[in-house]
Amino acid sequence: MSGYNVFARFYDELTANIDYKTRAEYFHEIIGRFKSTSGNILLDLACGTGSISEQMARLGYDVIGVDYSQEMLGIAIEKKFESGLPIQYLCQDMRNIDMFGTVDVTLCALDSINHLSSANDVKKVFERVHLFAEPDGLFIFDVNTPYKHRRILANNTFTYETDGVYCVWENSLNPDTDEVSMNLEFFVPDENGLYSRSTERFSEKAYPSELIEKLLTECGFEILAVYGDDTFAPPTDTSQRIIYAARTIK
Image (cartoon, rainbow, N blue to C red):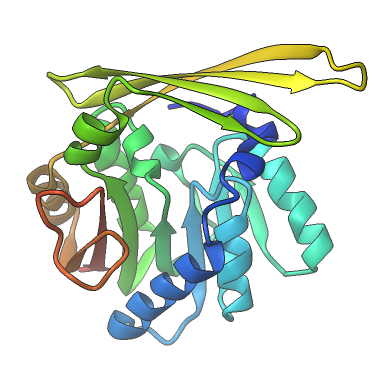
């Protein structure tokens, strides 16, 4: 699982196309459909630079953000100082989260589950989420689909250019495991027009929906809904993202 040490510096700049406000409102609506607990504590698991955490806090949740990368959390904390929102951030591996108490909603967005390299690791995360969830607590997360890995990410190369960085993103697909190895090369100009180069490597693995649902059930969750591509419709064979909503059974 990558710590996003280099990527953290450029993450917000290269993901500026993501409408975090709209995504947060989408998750807020899912929570409104299924939430039965009276509490409002929300765990943002693999929170990254805190963009979703900030938006969920603005929607009235008491947010705890957890991420493995100190560099990503450093940026999240800078945002917190600027916004003044009362978000608590913890540096933890999501396979071994250790909360001070229980939470009402756990949210894990932007394909963070795909960064786990094995089904065993996915199960570890589900078990820890269940352990620290309130009875009837919600677990909402999204994953990139095998279709996206095979047809969209695949062995393709993408380039991104902003005022601050030029990025070459190269993918390599293992068709036997649906795992995509990703190599990112960052070129950053200085005041003289010269470029410095840095590299980040990580991988994402797509898990079939049957396996995800099996692991959720084994770990004590009731599956409430399965949506495709940030909608409230069922996923299709060409959905690139699947969103799961589950309830803790204790």
